[in-house]
Image (cartoon, rainbow, N blue to C red; front, side, top):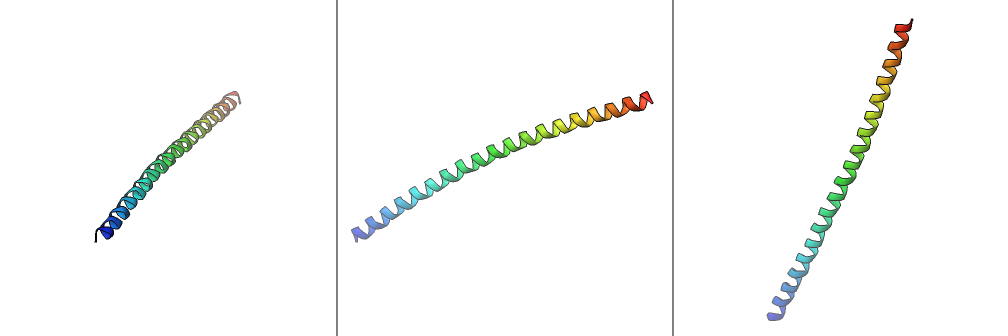
Length: 69
């Protein structure tokens, strides 16, 4: 009887440790995903800013050509 209780106790401890490891892994993985998403957002913002600058430059050049003609 005590041997069976000890076995269940050991199984419970092992299961708890495995669950803790999985939770920690999931949290670390989630933070890593958030970081890469933030990096992608920053790159996208840089690209959008560059595109906006190019559009403004093209519009300014177009307006200059209209004024000169």
